[in-house]
Amino acid sequence: GGGSAMDCAKGVGISVVYPNKSLEKFKGILKVHKKIPTLVAIPTTAGTGSECTVATVLTNEKTHQKYAINDLHLIPRYAVLAPELTQGLPAFLTATTGMDALTHAIEAFIGRGNTKQTTAWAKEAVQLVFENIKIACQNGSDLVARAKMQKASYLAGLAFTRAYVGYVHAVAHSLGGRYNVAHGLANAVILPYVLKRYSTSVYDKLAILADCCKLCPNGTAKEKATAFIEEIEQLNKELGIGTKFYFIQKEDIPYLATLADKEANPLYPVPKLMDKKELEKIYFDLIP
Image (cartoon, rainbow, N blue to C red; front, side, top):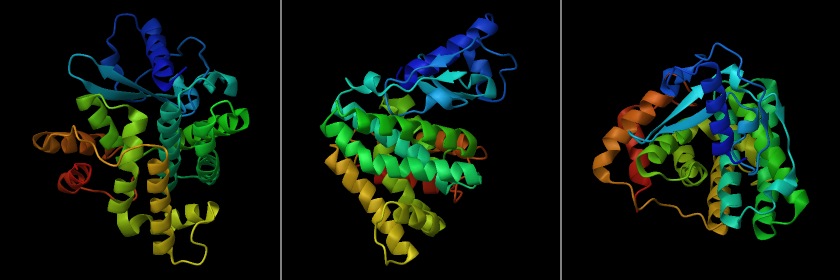
């Protein structure tokens, strides 16, 4: 039901059709050449969008590295969106999984892999999260807000499974593997820092998102983009999500930046390509 459960089911599906192969062999893109058994995905969080994506993220228990398998055969045949199933999700998990969906939508939208359709899905997802995440966290039994968050997660999933993600995900995966931090929480904290590091390369697109959310109506592109990033920081604050990660060890940073660099380049159509040294700065931003 949660992203990890759906991802696990996708992994099981691969193992069913390839009983003698280790899942690591399918790491990367388009390596699953057979149909997996019919998969019905029923999300119990409004977050990962795994119910409609090509992706499964698995962790190697021995090396603590997270890796992704991306293949069209992994898109579930059916997705069942029932807000009742997210009703019991505690406020903090509602917040971090909701911010995960927001990250998917924003990274898809600002990347260079968009179509008209992914742009529309991502914009709607961003609006839905901004309008509903606080309500869903404050009053978990509000089924209207819950349903809208599920729709946001689903639309963000449709967008990012086609347009892909960027450095927020690459950094989050490196931290998740090394320190076991939950993916949604990692994305939420990292998102504003990466958007700032993208700098001028994302002003125009973030300005469009700011307009969708009625922020800073008369500003320049830079002012709108800044207002949008500040709104994300404000959301994190109100949802009780911190701004720093105390557990990051400085001596780990070169290794983590190498992992993020390898994951993102050439795979992710990021707005601005950063080298290892530039990526290291993002990890230093995250240290208190």
